Picture 1 (tube, rainbow, N blue to C red):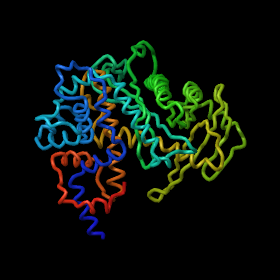
Picture 2 (tube, rainbow, N blue to C red; picture 1 turned 135 degrees about the horizontal axis):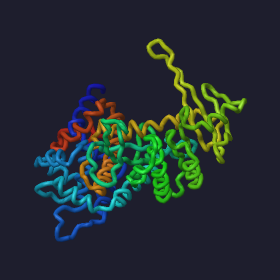
Picture 3 (cartoon, one colour; picture 1 turned 120 degrees about the vertical axis):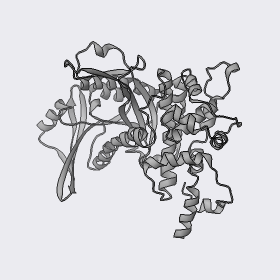
Picture 4 (cartoon, rainbow, N blue to C red; picture 1 turned 180 degrees about the vertical axis):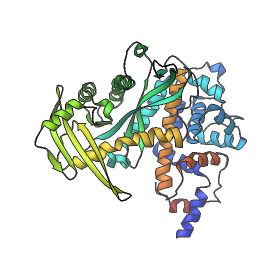
Length: 441
């Protein structure tokens, strides 16, 4: 069966977008109907393309990993691509897909809350599926929190950009501008992360008046954005059992109290120097609980809050030498010998928001750092649409490529999908029995 199976897989892989569409229909069949319900801000007499056609085109831009609107317009001009994408979207066929300029004008007027509603609904549907239940830790869903910078450059494209001064006070002092966003991603296991809430970190003007270090500004910005993000998350998922997983920037009483007031647990990593009060109290406690390479203490005082501290030492042999790496977290969850290892694994899952989240979207599956528009509202909508496309593509990678043992370089996945937009295999090329014989999803 080995060679026969490889032959069938080879045929199926001639048309990866069809497999991606099946995954989308399997896990979120409402996608295009949700696009259709978006409130249209345009005057009816000027509408050439429906909301479903506009957003469907942007969705496939993300699936194809296309960075710019010009690149999308060029790639989607092909007659076969146009015909197939209209078929995928489930719309009446037109001569052309929307032009990049037309899409940007549309996104400048669409309320980002409309995109956030779809983002929320996708996350809710994944939570309701039993498929991802194993991702929960101690009956809690892990929500990974982190911020990232987008579109850094020497030009301030709109008033919401943040600034950073280099070589301050020197002759070669210069300023660079960037957008930033705080992201909450739901961890679904198997390296799958789904955007569950997004909050822009925007310029309020106050940081230009303060003498703060770059690290202090970063912490202050993300800390304030976390409060707004938390309110959004709580409103959308009132009763969801959540454990917030974050890095050392979030070791603060403000974050701890926000989690407590929302009924959430937290698991926050801290490094040497980022939480001196906690470390001093921890070291002053003579008796520590140990299990394997981990040690912990419950009830360490941090300002007026009690936190539980968990430390872990990892030892690996690399090139014949022992490499030792230390980790430390604070958590609201009472630590025991039974759950320490689970908490360690949960804490170490935080890097997935960087790797499976930001890094893939910046380097492997497109480029979210590219500004597809100078307009602030359009930029928000572009980012949210990228999160939707990328999650569907993650499902495709896991439930089709990985399940069928199809190995591809990350950088080739999007280009292969794009190449298949203009071709469709016929039923005679792949028999239905062949399709079902190796289907794993």
